[in-house]
Structures are given as structure tokens and as C-alpha cells.
Length: 288
Image (cartoon, rainbow, N blue to C red; front, top):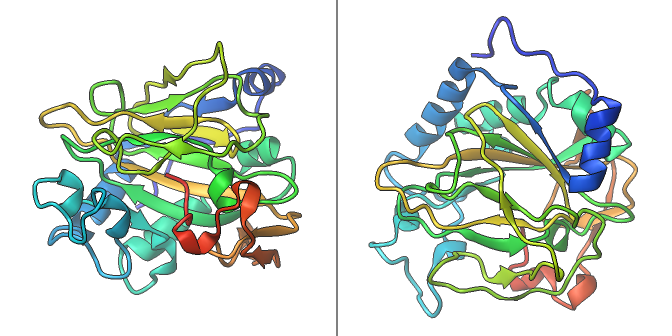
């Protein structure tokens, strides 16, 4: 249940906007209270109580190289991420995801950072249990392929996130980069296959988050996470992606762009090869 006294989000100050332009990310501390976070956590954990859910859990992305079935010793075999839960109205995670994806507290910040009406195009839930591999450094717009601008993420921490449990890393100063053709990642450390090397002189930095904080960053910013090396701590997160309502095209994997007034906008779907010649049919389907 949404708190009766939610933290009211405001537009960003000039100082916060300047910091975003300089660093490429913004953290809204304590946007969601403990009762809301408990509801999100409990709803998704209950949905996955018997393991991956057909049509919702992204099992294929968590296979180790050369494997045709999941390794039962891999924590992600039981807890793969859930993709587009907001489109599953028949399951409890569906309306809950859609409600938070379009929560009015997100709107002022997104409106400032997108510089247009934001339209929601994706939700994801990551469980990241103890011992899980991480997500290698990448850029989100390699997957969403928004034109002419880029996408924006709102990464909601459902657990405290830090170095030990594989918290988020960002590379400050990369928000205005062109999309870089990725290299291969290390499958022993990461469940994803793409790696983007930061430019010379720039390096990833951990962003420590408390449950209820929201990390905002755009589709060019290089970011990722290392494995969860803790023995008992999950690093769960609900992640939503937005695009400018005035975008002319987006990858065909992202359907029904929805503004905060609940109206769906018409954005052309593309299946072209993107900046690196990779087609969307080659499983380049979503940010990691």
C-alpha cells in the first residue's frame, strides 16, 4: 500500500541539475518509505517463491556460456531477473510495478532530466541473491535505441546496496558519450555478455544506496555492478526506463510508451542494427 504521507518529490535545483550535467547521475534519497519497499520486496519474492515464472523471468540471459540449461549451483538459476512485470496484469507484480513505474514522485525529476514529457517503456526486477554474478559495464541506449535522444533510468533500491552485495557503479563524466560498441565480458564475474570500457582517465565509482533511494541516469552513462560477495544479503531493485515522449523511434522490444497521465504515445518501432551492427534478434533486447 502506498504511504498516506509520501515524500513529495520536487523539481531539481539549479545545483542538482549542474551536478547531473557534470557527473551524469542523481540520487533521490528516501523517495519511497519502508512500508512501500517492504510491499515491493514481498510481492516479488512471493512471485518467485517456487523459482522462475514462465513468460516473466528472464532465464536465457542467466545461462553460463555454452550451457543449454541453468546451472543449479548458480544463484541466478532460481532468481533470474523479471522482465516487463508491468505488462503482467494477471499477476500481483503487474499492477504494483505499473503503479510505481508511474508514481507521481518520479515525475518532476524525470521531467527535468528528460527535458520532455517522460514516457515509461520498461520495468525490471533484479533479485541478485548472495553469490550472484554482476552486470558488466554497459550503456542502456545500446539496447533501447531511442532516437533522437536517449533513455532515462529510475533505479529503485529495494535493499541497501554497497560494495559487498554488488551495488551500482557509475562512470562519472560519460553521460554525453556516443554509444560504444561493446567488448566481451568475463562470464565468471558477469551474467551479461557486453562490456564497455570507460574512456582513459575515467573509472567506475560505487553509488551507495539505502532501500527507498532512487538513482537516476541516462542511456549513455556507463554503469554496472560487481558480483554479490555477501553471504546473506540480497541486492534487489525495481528498475524503470523512460524515453522522451517526442522520440521518433525505439527498439521494438519496448511497447506501449505511457506518459504519467496514463496516455500511450505513438513512437515508431525499429529493428535496425543499431550503432554496432547488432540486430535486436540477436538477443540485444534490454539493458542489464
